[in-house]
Length: 80
Image (tube, rainbow, N blue to C red; front, side, top):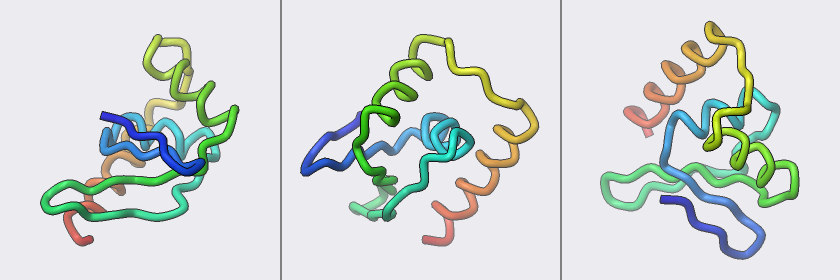
């Protein structure tokens, strides 16, 4: 589930977050809502394009970097 509000793009999908981070999109904040951890990005045309490409299997990323980023994000979620 992704939410767009006030020029922000929020997602809880760690796979998507990892892809955005690898493509140089930095989260502007992390929000906890009960047991859910939301990663908030600036909603820009580039962010929107990257999300589209991620979901339609045309966003190439380095496999090792992607795996390492997922591990890092899991650690953040568990410690946040």
